[in-house]
Image (cartoon, each protein chain N blue to C red):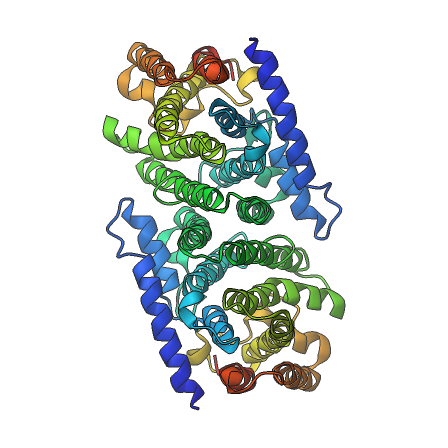
Length: 295
Length: 295
């Protein structure tokens, strides 16, 4: 199978679904809906929703069972980017080659657009719960996503990241930051798809292991792209981590060791999929692809 | 019955439940848990959770059925106050006589503490859904709360409020702002309690009407307290709305007409409770109490 074609296809399904739930911003107050759409449609890769629906298919279900939750995951991811970019946080002006939300709409609206995307994510999950027969699966997924997005996950990672700025940190703190800031929501995305697709506990365990390693590989390659990437492709200046004195895998482990760690994580991710047949082929290819991605 | 005793009793039940779910902040990262507790325990009246559990009792159920959701409502209310106070929003240094969250913890942590409280609210609702048999009631309540907190509710009101600053606004816009910024979550609180208590559609309809009028009375008296209140009791300087050039009921309708509107709203709120017997007595007294409150 051709991963690129597969990803394009899934991305367009997700983009269509996101477009449906974020109606054209004609509803009062227009400005906040514009700001929400602006960041959701600013060119994201849709990694989390793709992982979610692909994991759902990997356990033998159809992607529709996970689509609303997949969209909710992208809204949460987008909210986190908007808030991360704020002047009080990373103070970034550019994201994916475009002005960040607060540059385009002002700080107040950017904060509220993030709040609104987070809130809307849980509205969508509740709405979906009302429609489906699998009530407990939706509650479990809702709980796991909230945990992964909260202080024991993404927000916790961001807090430690902020408190560590301009400080020398050790490998353990770096791993804490990335496990929480990026890893937790990636893991929740894969698990959500598997749970909604009614995967058995063995399948869910293996997919969880896959997701943990994939998240690690994703973060290391992200750090490497910040050094070696093509500015046009990554949509921001290279070297920004260094400029912001962010601790990264290359800065702690060195470049060669970081590459080695990413390769190892991908091998472990692939190994975790051994119990699956071809239905997990997209997940296998995705893991490999992460090593060679350009953005 | 003595409303003051009743409110004290309910407040202590809610405070205890909030204390349980916001464990002492020993868990890493400590700072964010400290910041969350700081604002949740900064002396709020617990109006929304009290309305929620009292509405649950008014339809003949026991308050425990609504307690987790009541706590979630207070977390959402607290998040909204933290974000409202931010420099990019109302830029307030004091709230209930104490430094606001961003003054005490810095802007980045304040933004994240708000995000975390909002996220945690939905974690609690999902967790509760897993435990209860009334799955659809919890999904409905989750959806209504998310809607009331989102762009069609609280955030929408805040957006219009911010976009209206230093502008002359009309009565319609003022009503839009308050219906959405304050009214929507108050309505959702009452409805949530009634739905979780398995109230019938007639009861829910009347309680909704009650809540709409109560929310209006609450907002008008809030505006009046900003002019005539005792700084020590309201915990912030009087006249701050005027200083911030906020449109208020007295500034648009005048003081006498505003008082009249608040009285009328309370009468309508009481009338909406006519179908209930003594189980709705606390709600009746609460409505009257709002007219004479001092903070």
